[in-house]
Length: 358
Image (cartoon, rainbow, N blue to C red; front, side, top):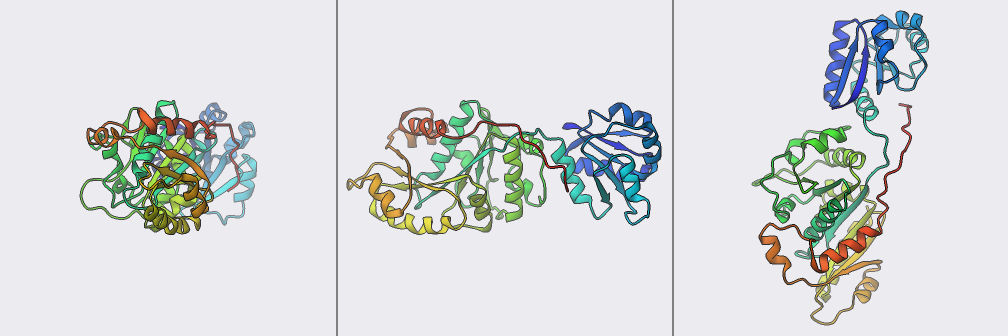
């Protein structure tokens, strides 16, 4: 759990409601039933949520002014509610139960580290069997080995499962179905701690058997948490875009489209690229060898009107390694491509300031 939210109230009904909301936000909550107890924890709490019953007592104690103070009340229309908020330096008033969702999001946001967001890379194939899933898995695995907190997201419900590419299908942890009903803000800590991981790489994939498509709101919620909790997020997306995969494209800092060096593959990729351009801000081409007819990568890039991110040379050992459950990108041409690509990413995390406004 994250650093504590301080609940200041002696009203048992209000306290129970606020503890329930803290649990929904997956944050630790501490209750101060009087002003003296509140004052001792006032400075260090990530967020203070006070009830109207202790405002006068708190004001008499004159706690130091600080950001992140909220007055929670079931009677927001009372004449004195905003005066009470001013008395304790509250920046916001949460009218319950209407503001429950907002308050859960504030609790989750306040208790997470103030760090810059992750770099997000989407990967999709220009045709079936292009090697997009292998590239996505290799990039994520290579990044984790470089010490980056990395999440690999399987956005293709009809694929074979990206966890199989990594040999991680038996690793316990949450899958997409466990987030099916998720809406709104998700704690990045809760996401990180719930997912299966292998070699320092967190993976979000599908259960075996029949799967239900992910709702776009769920994809948005998960990726928002991922950006707050990781250094790098890699999403493997289908060529046939769903509403959820369109959300993932829109969230990506960069999208890579993998195209074999073949004429028909380039023609098919042109249609896929036209779809992707509607949603992604930065679409780039990765050409996969070999080129049976001698088709050059720069010719493919020109025909698709895409910048060339790099070339993946053929690796005859790769299919056997994947069948054995070995992580791709541990050696050979694919490893070299990943090293070059990751070396150019802006993955340094810098402090940022959270806006305290609602």
